[in-house]
Length: 295
Image (cartoon, rainbow, N blue to C red; front, side, top):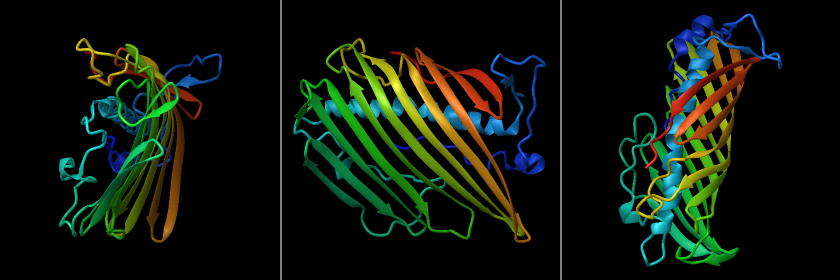
């Protein structure tokens, strides 16, 4: 799984026109901290908001992927065999013309089940590494029966070979721990980082955009369903804090001009709904976003 992403090129025209990240205030009064409400139509905020929303859409998918490891085949391998890995459409346009067969490795060592997968195309490549381990009372379990703890790590990468043409490169990493799996409420904590690098090649100019996120997941709760299974990764409470960095470099006539902006994002979750606060340049924006539906 990889999160949904917004192409950084979306909104590019607005950014080129306003280039230095238009800003402002919607109120004459300031908060006690000196931070003022930002303008809802700020083009920088609108792009970041869409990235945040797409990230939040992916959260319950990641958690469901982790919880699904509990219901592995009784043979003991919680990760998908090669025969179950479907043809993956990677990147904005997918891969074109597969080159050779996928690279697939799997194994078990020191309490970890792991899988490595890579597929090469004529224009790009995609790879991921999955690792998962089960524990009970701090002791390793080969199978998930009786577990109270699960740790799930994934590295993934999409790299486009068309470096002189318009293209997007993606990479990411998450490392999450699930505790309390022997109860009706599990706590999820960990990290989720990803990077988008977008290059636009025009007739007489180029644009390079970099969008990076470092997210910290703090005690996000998921509950056991009515069927007594962890069937839904929709969180009922918890906090996700994100540091986002966005930069654009426009090069025309061999003269690069760069614009950069940093954001602090906090999402407070309640029954699948996130109250999001975004802060940048001493301004703040708040809104609610429905991530998923509790079951």
